[in-house]
Image (cartoon, rainbow, N blue to C red; front, side, top):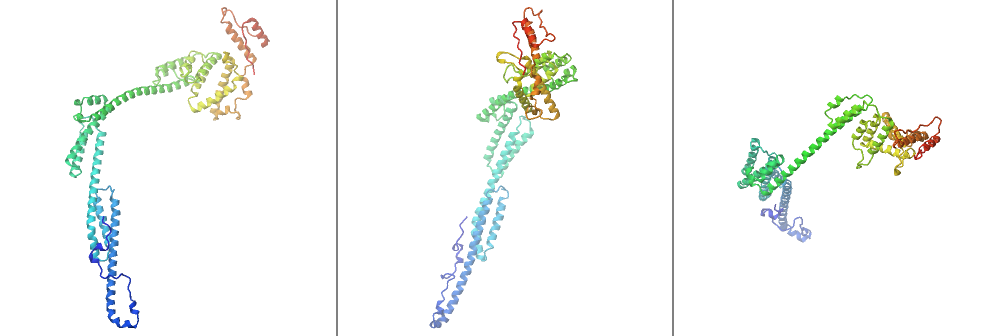
Length: 529
């Protein structure tokens, strides 16, 4: 755009005669004295002429100012409008909208000029820059439309590549390729492309579609993709035209897909096995809960017909059903077995002796070494650490048992001295705690209150623990049992027996008699506290 014109640049027609400055007139000579009155007549006519010229000059200057201001107004508005249209995406109507707005700006500006000659002069000077700017807008619209058309063709090509087919007889896809060629021809008709550029674009598109077809083949049939890419004569007609780098990349994709397919198949087998085991475990838990209840209803037929059980689980469930009809072992045998299982359940992860499967619990119960109640308790403890709430409760219970154990269990593992009676008492305490936890849960109470010294239900009160301490009589009977067991291991075990306490015999008298009879035996009586 040209600079705002000066008054002189607006044309010679605007030049006003006279060189006297506007707004300053020297009239002091009319008050100089009486001697000048004689000249008044002659000078009055000249003064009138000068005033007329000054008035004309002032009017012309005002018209020039209007023209200058209008010219500045028009240029300022046109520059602002051009900036707004610079990134206008509506290329189809861009030229028309610019022409309409520019015309309105010019007419609004020209309406501010009262002198017709100056108005036409300003209009004439605007013709050249307006024509230049209109041509630039037309070029902008053309380039924008061409870019939009190219972007549309690129998106359409990408869509065809994404949905390429391996079926050579797919007429719908073939029609899509023909439509792409038609859009390229349309670009030529609209002068967006030259015929040579259109031919090159069709060639690039054909190669891109060929590569897209083999990319799809590498996902769906990687073996075929590798075979044809390595032997181009047996594949797509344009396969030989693909750059080697592209073919190498497609071969790598196909090999990666082969590896992924193999791993996916392996993972599918693992997941399927996990699903089968999960369903079997759920069915197993339901059957065990029924068989270990007070009124079991599951039959061997029900177990045999259960489709969710794995063969191994079904074998165990049938054995458990058979075992339910057999009497439980004596309490002492069951207690010893249960304590041994609990010790192994609570070993650290990674310990080879740790029980990590229910099978060993099933084996003990099926073999008749575990009662139904002890089996249910040990099984519950096996699952206790598998939930956050269960783990928290188990931690509190074990901490409590550890704190009271020295007063009940006199075992000394360092020297191999195991207080079996004390351990049995600890197991009894743990079973009673488990029952109290069940009662709390049934009544809606917090079972953690059982281990809180400040709560009324605290189970660690001295009077509550007294029943779990070993009495002298219990210690004497336990020693007698141990002595009898050791005596029977000798050569004459078949004929030897442990004599019972006599009526009225005190523990001290009984121990003295037993030591006299078995001088080599070391009879230990745990202290009662």
